[in-house]
Amino acid sequence: MCSYLLNILQKLTQCSQYLDILYKVERKVFQDIEKVTLIDNTLRLEDANKFKNIMILYSSALKELETKISIINDEFKYIHNYNPIEHVKSRIKSIDSIAKKLEKKGLEFTYSNIVEQINDIAGIRIICSFIPDIYSIVDMIDNCPDIEILEKKDYIKNPKKSGYTSYHLIVSVPITFSTGLVYVKAEIQIRTMAMDFWASLEHKISYKFEGNVPNSVNKDLKDCAKMINKLDNKMLSLNETVNTLDTNSKESNLL
Image 1 (cartoon, rainbow, N blue to C red):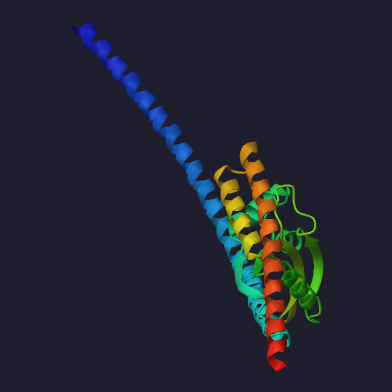
Image 2: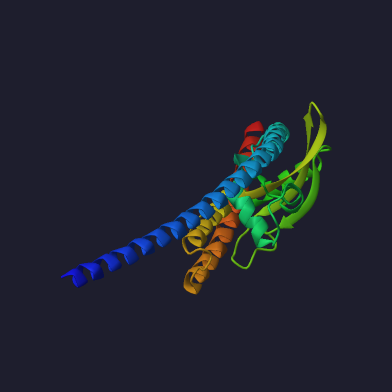
């Protein structure tokens, strides 16, 4: 009996020692996790503060661009008695999107990399009725003396392999602060309503498949892009016909 009890006590002692070792190991692991979490949170906090400072620049650039685009639209309407812009959308990239884009480029999350390597943190999308409106707006932006166009990409004449069509501009916008003048980069996308519909659907599909869209779906998207292009051209032709009939009717009434 005593031998049996002694055996149990030895096992309990061994178990206790094991639990004690396990506790110490577990505690060490949690201490390391707490340190990492603390460092990570500190880094995140510092990045967040820097990010907030940077976002003031890009938020100001959007306001400046929105004002200028509104003026361009008013001027176009005054000269041509026609409003080319259906609506305008604006956005600023999230910190996660910026971090992922820098990671994709193989770059660290630093102030200089954000400002110098990413051109589309501030973005404006101008939606037009017809394709010629796009080029008219590009010309008017090009003629703005305080907006410098750094890069042009015409995906209407040269669509992407996916079928994507739009006109992209990377611009530099002067922002006046109390401390002085700062030039901020932004992206302007100009497209028709039909192009925007296609691009929005393609983006949702790509996001759903995490970029690995099945070939059959890609083929259907390309076919839809061709239909979108035909639709844009057909609607333009219809609009020109209506304008011609309207002009002829007015001239006839003058006789």
